[in-house]
Length: 171
Image (cartoon, rainbow, N blue to C red; front, top):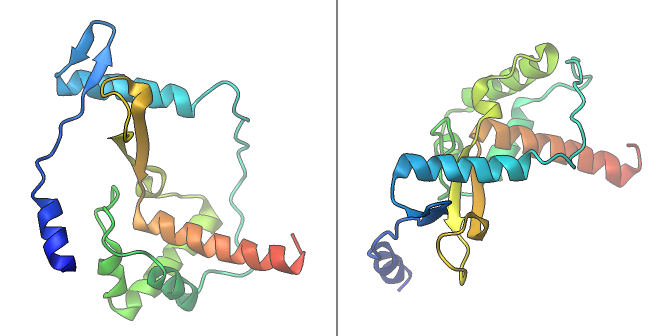
């Protein structure tokens, strides 16, 4: 039954995004991109937000390990859209063990040198229509940002480390 429901849901025709600008509704894709980018750019870069402090890179006292990366990869959810790196969780979960060592080496290199691959800092913004809201105004769009798998692995590893320190009261 699960497969049948999934097949039925896939058959729904894709509804194109409707965006309003100063002159009304636009169907020009490049104009829609400009409007949505400006809207979310203003939202994410508001003047009320705290300034980001530039912290110099510092080698970690406890480096990322192959096992730590492997645990993080195994905790990723399947059937999710890929980010800018076009890698899915399933690719990493079914990859060879040497892959986890290479990812750990990359993360340790980033921590030590501050050389961050552009894929880690880049996401793909996907605007989704909020359910039950009028189509057109950009305020009725929900931002979803697709991040790279390496960034997700880094976040999971750091959250686990910080969580353990917070639990011990050592932060």
